[in-house]
Image (cartoon, rainbow, N blue to C red; front, side, top):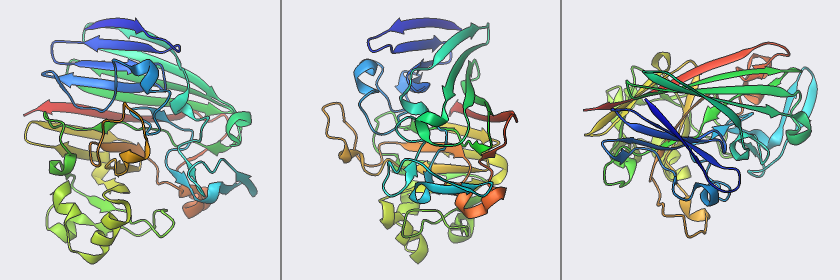
Length: 335
């Protein structure tokens, strides 16, 4: 394994890791993944060449660590321990992805630990209540490990000074196609494929759509899902122009694949949000080269808005002075 640190402007640094099997690039800006190449095919969306200009300006959370709360909180409001909190409504009227002062647009401190068969990048930051209006200050450590099996592992460590919410994820967009065409040909597979429908406000409902029952198999291509005439599913796809939905899979295991690659995802988080980059045209910028369905996110997390759905049983509640730990891995297999 080999590591090169490249400094750009605006305090942005690239951590370039290479092995015989592949190359991966992280940045301290948002603790983001910006490139992952196998056989010179980049399977994630991002911009390494102009990272110092691209990442501070784009609105799409490309490859970034997201928090303190991934997903939406309805009306930017929740109750915890009998007290009501109001947080930024940056996706009006809802709160989204920790708000403008969340993790995705900050420079992380980091250190690199090199070994023969793996490299670790240890990112750290502090989330303060005064910046985002959530209760409690959280010390956050995110460890990225890239190893010789073409596996990128994310480990989240956190501890809060008060009871609060903590629901971290990485907003990586994958596109496994060599020609970078849309991801509609990608297949999703798990022994359980439960999709949470969205209500009229964009919040997930508590009931699920069993895709295995609809399609008679525990795998389905996105194109098949998008063109389904099953009424509820068709209505959900039309609502957002693709997917922007939480899923629950069997024991946290999901495979996303095309003819060339299989991406094996394993997580201890209870849900996964799949988003097919449905509206890239909202960013009017010369560096916006994207079209709808240019990528698919695999955001491992707890259910968006879970605090308003499950109350004090929400998975996102982090009690004061109680260590948080979560682990997600993505392994890229060449077929």
